[in-house]
Amino acid sequence: MRYIGIMCGVTLLLYAASGVALTFAGPVGVVTPKPASSAETAYRRGVESLTKGELREAEAAFKEAAQLQPKAIPPLLGLADVALKQGNTKQAETYLQQALNTAPQSVEVHTAWGRYLFTQKRFSDAEAALQKAIALNPQAIAPHVTLGDLYLSGLRKPKEAIDAYRAVLALNPSHASTHYALGSALAATGDTEAAQAEFMEASRLAPDNPLPFQALGQLYVSRQEYDKGLDALANALKVQPQFVQAYLTRGDIFLFQGQGDKALAEYNEALRVAPKFALAYVKIGALHESNKQGEEAEKAYLAAIEVDSKQSIAYNNLAWMVAERRTRLGEALTWAKKAVELEPKIPHFQDTLGWVHRARGELDKAATVLQKATTVEPQQAVVWYHLGVVQAERKKTKEAVAALKQALKLQQDFLGVDDARKRLAELEKKS
Image 1 (tube, rainbow, N blue to C red):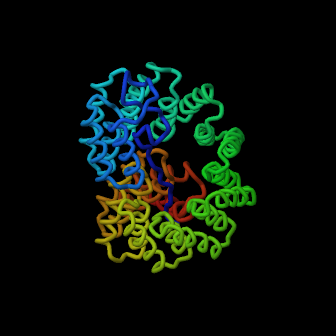
Image 2: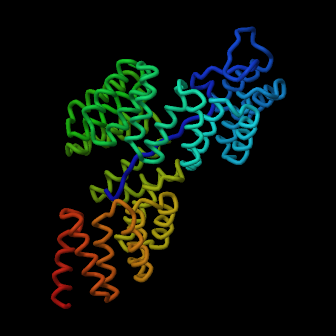
Image 3: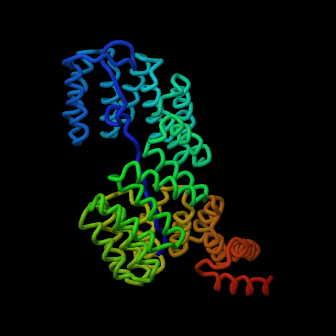
């Protein structure tokens, strides 16, 4: 298996969908019980349509609500959500700015703005917006939660995420999704015991949610406690039989145990449940690739790309396979460039691109790409090894020796380590 990874999603801006109380009358944040107005009725219709994925109907309903009550905030947030789902980020930002101008002291609006900035990877601005929301109302849960998510998956600061999530639990100790998020942050710091406790608490508070059981399963897998992992995943599937990620993780467990047939059966079960689940195709491709079943692996990777054109792992692995065979190198170059375009900070992808250039006889380009790949953290021994090979082929003996030494300094068991040692010994004899 050349490379495999996990994808993640983002949170909606629409507060009504996440349980935050909104109102159409009076000051923002003050709810006055009364019969639903025409604007509220239109808004609720918009929420229902958005939940069903009926974007055109949702947009029309939110616009109707906004026209009926121009100073209402919820329709603007709804329209921003629709625009985001339509891929129109400029329009989404316009709606959110309109909401900010209408209600500059609204916690909900600043939180929505922070979430939007988060989705656009404007992390510093998102942090400022969420901190503003918290300053407006330190007791508001939503901005604390979103700030924790930003620290965990955006800024990659799990310790700060832990503080944010614990602030939520100080306000509401029974907030199940925050126990789950806190467990994820603790796991990211390596504190698996504390993470386990949080996942278990989340599963106790929300027994009908498969995610805490899934997280427990993955945690057990990381500790090679495979039987416990299978039990946790069985609980996830008992709660939700269509939960495809559990099938993938079960497949991974069987793969780690050397039971390839069982692993393949689990990945195929995931596809039965969700025929367009691209990651399942990637897993199947990686399994076939590791078994040197190139034709089957290629079919699986191409299927992954067909259902999800942004499957960077599939592009990368396809490029690597054909480059190793020295065939279809034009396609290999296209695939490798696509993987790097989608994920420029993954050193393995740049490594593959460099290796494709080498296969094409473009040694200078290969050296340039691989040199760049060595600067991407965390540094990978195999990248330095490949750079050493290319530098040797360019007759750059001094550079080749330095690269091979760095590879062996970083790691002693990477793929190709024996060849690296052999090449280094031969080059040092010549120098």
